[in-house]
Image: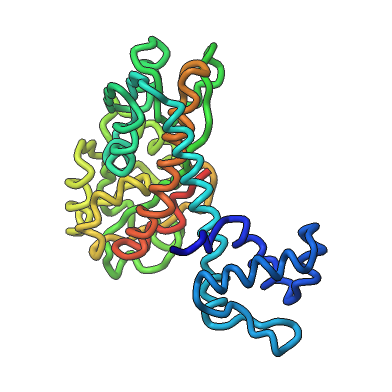
Length: 320
């Protein structure tokens, strides 16, 4: 049986030797002796059954196997560290009963990725969703224990808050010749020829989008409220309207991506941030676990899916 050839401490030593090209310099950097460094590298090579360095040259050079470990080493350390942290956090959650509320966008796009870990880390689990103000209000009334929404409830007594991720609002127009050009100014002259498709007035998205809409400085154009994002994108893909949409919401409408054109506003005013808010220290372990899993779902899963299926969304949603 292999004797733990890829322990974190061994990988860190290997990476330092590879970076310095010398066991002696690596020993000085790490505060170890050169024989100790040499022993670790030899043990790794023996257990792996390959040479990691070509020792005939100075500085030492990586072999093909060594290069593979060097490229993956930092990621391995990060993944192992995250796994250990999540196991520790999950263990500290114990038999917690959790009532959680989240915005509709998070419920649709992120909760499916973290649901299983949440289920295992809690004794009982209740999840509801709605607009950010609705979810925030539930937390204020203590009807739920954790709220994932765009409201940072830092002014509320005994509520702790931390940022999760941010997303940009994008101008969405038909992918037609009259909307050629990649800037707002290039397409703005043609916006007044089509109706603007917006959110219903009783939603938080309505107020956020209305604020961004006013920055365009357009003459009054016809506005039509539409409660279905998929319906809006279908109409726009047919060349019959335009809209302003948060990036994450567009992921669920990727069916229409080939007939849509997305244009960023290039301003912080067209960005919103989601927060995790929770009551008291008792919910800190599960909140930290949940925040870590959501960020991991974004970076390791959703962004990868963006790259494969809807690359225009890359760079418009980012972890905080």
